[in-house]
Length: 251
Image (tube, rainbow, N blue to C red; front, side):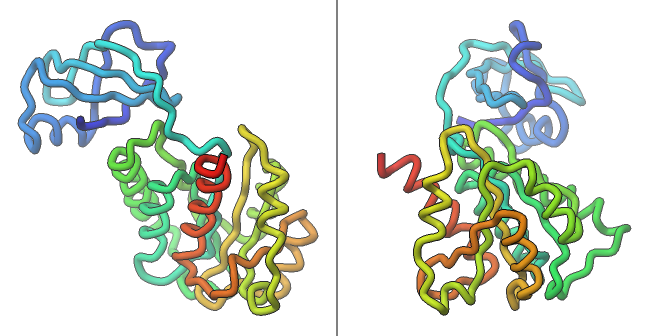
């Protein structure tokens, strides 16, 4: 059944929900749904309701709540993916697939080895596209919430944000080359349901020794993700998959 995210929270909803924005066109023109059709509406605070379409207007679709559903498909820990800005459409790939795998937010940042340097006038359109990708991936993967995609920031801001997280890890290829195997497990052992995890990944070329030193000083676990060297767009997906297995499938 088709799912749509709405800009409301459950506490403010009595019997009706209005679907707005581009989803109006999708419901009425693409799917050509009619009054009486059924859709799932997902609220900003992670609840979902089975709804029946009531009427269409030019700017919204009015729906009636038939029942609230209680399925929670979110990871038991909140994971933020901080990616050093990569080339091409790799960040879009990370956002799309990372959303499917359960990330709660994405934080692009300018790393020392980032080749891409976004101009300020282009950031608005990029953010709009990234958030659209996250929304569509959330709908496709039956997420309860849409991950946040933050505006690109400088490396220093990552260090400041890190203070608000329970556990912090950084992927470092030199650790993999040296055979380090235990730090990721140690990080997981310090995570509990409801905790937050910040994971930092470098761009092509990785993070510099100086960046790693500053992250380690800020309390990050310096981790390898096994003996193989992963691409900048692959490593975040590895981490999210490992978290899912550790907290959802192995227990």
